[in-house]
Length: 318
Image 1 (cartoon, rainbow, N blue to C red):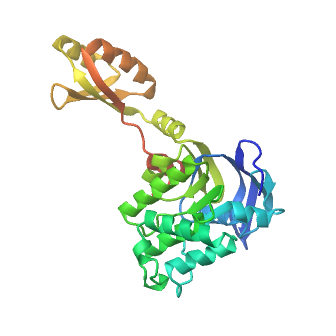
Image 2: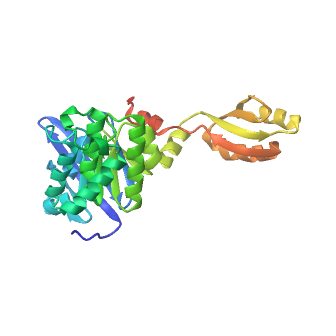
Image 3: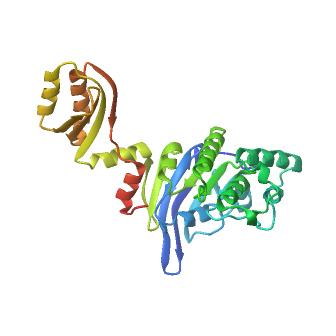
């Protein structure tokens, strides 16, 4: 067993990788903290999968170092593989074997005691609504069903670090929800999770920090809230939604006369949409609203989504 050291789970330093004349990664550097769910984002061909394959010791980098829980992956490959789980974008299962047989085979590779393996496999298959299909052969499964077994295989040995490359490929909305809830569950029990995906809303739901890479380079790494705030500051016009009551009509007219308030619309006597010029006026608007409205139930700024941030930084649409 590898003993956990400080608060860093993964330390990636100056990782580069080329395939012939194509440089897939260029001096990529960032860290993952223990116990976080971290999102790795980027367009197709950005280098995400290459980095994941290096992290999981499938590929070797041309230069740079990676430490997982303080251990250099090039020196502790066998030990590293026992404490990480990997769910690749493509299904890595034996097509002629059943779901149960595939998972029992994976359990034997990790030397999991047979009684414990059976109990864990039953738990996972039931959690992913696949227990009744346990004896079905993978070749007869839909892509979504096979992906569920693929995920079960990656987490069967209770890894300390779980790496998932586009794990929701082929899954229906209900199954994606099951995966999301399970990731939150095991993360709550201490598992560090690295997630690559194009499903931005799922990243926003479970990740606090993300790294965005494009053309092999790290574009940014920050909390989602900071990235959204930075994107918001780029906007000239900002919409603010307010729910509340204005008892004095003159207060309403005064609000409309302020030069940096571009527009005030209301659907009824309770819900207003106020357009202002410039992010630097948000706090001043909040002060004015407290003076103008007799009661306020909610104030919401129309902030950018993570997808807006992604498009802005990479200049690409997902």
